[in-house]
Length: 338
Image (cartoon, rainbow, N blue to C red; front, side, top):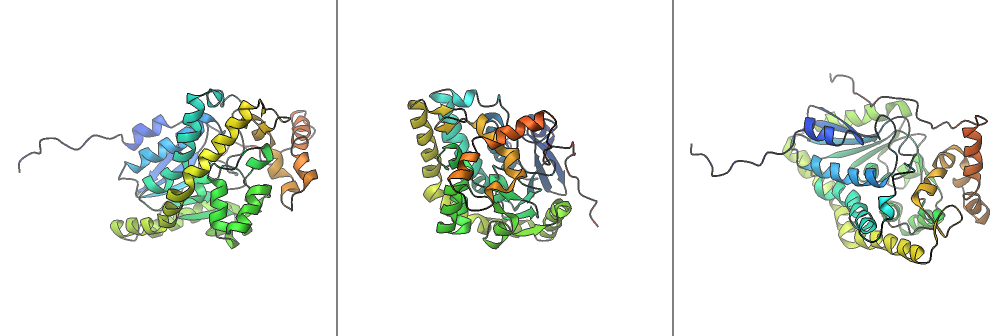
C-alpha cells in the first residue's frame, strides 16, 4: 500500500496535556471514560482569570483526543467551586486588551466549547453547593447531591448577569421563573433544579460520583458511533440557544462593567459594581446561612454587603466555623468495573 504524502498530525496525548493543566484539573481515564476534576493545585478550584481561561482551553484540547469517548465533569472535595484567588484578577482588570480578551473570548468560550467542541456524551457531577456551575449544567446529563444550593449571583454585586448562567436559568426554568432567579439572586436547591429541568437526578452526597460512573459505563455498552450521535441530539437545543443569544449575554456583561469602570464605580463592597475578588468573599457565607433561599428584599440585599465580612472575621479569629472549608479530599476514583 502506497504511503500518503503527509501523515496525520501528531496531537498531544492525555499524559502530556494532563501536565499542561495539572494546576486546574485532575484527569483520570478508564476504558474511554474521562473524569475531569476541577481544582487549583491540590485544593478546590479558586476562581480567577487564569482558571476561567483554563476551563475553556482544556475542553478544546479534550475535544481533539478521540480516546475521550465519554467525559464526566466534577469538582474536588464536597462542594462545587466556592473560593476565589484574591490575586487572580489583576490581568483581568487591564484595559483595553486583557479585559476584552477575558470577557469577550473567555466568557464565551467557557460556555460554547462545552457544547460545540465536545461531540461525545458528557455528565456533570455536582458534589455540593457552589457557584460558576456552567460546566456541570452544560453536560448532557447532570447529577446533583441532595445538599446542592446554587444561584446566579451577579446582580448582588452590581454586575449584569451575562456570563451564561442567567441565560441558562431562563432556558431551564422558563422565562419568568428564570428572570426571577437571575434578577433577585435567590438561591435554588437541588430539588428545584430537578423539578425545573436543570438537573437529571438528585442523589445522596456520597453517591454522586458513583452514579456518574454507572451512567458512563452504561453508555459504553452502546456502539461508539451511536452514542456519539445521540450526544449531538442532546446538545442541539443548547447549540441553537447559543447561536441566538450567547454573545449578546456575554457582551452585555462586558458593556455594563465598562460603564462602571468609566464612572469610577468598580471596586470594593461599597462600589456600584464589586470587583470579582470582593464578590468571592461572600461565597462561604452564602452557602452556610439560608439568607438567600427565600424571597429577596432590600434588607437581605443590603446584608450581602456587610454580614459575610463580619462572619469571616469571626471565622478568621476562630470564633465561628465554616462547614464548607476544604478538608483535603483526593480526587474521586471509581471502583473497578464488574
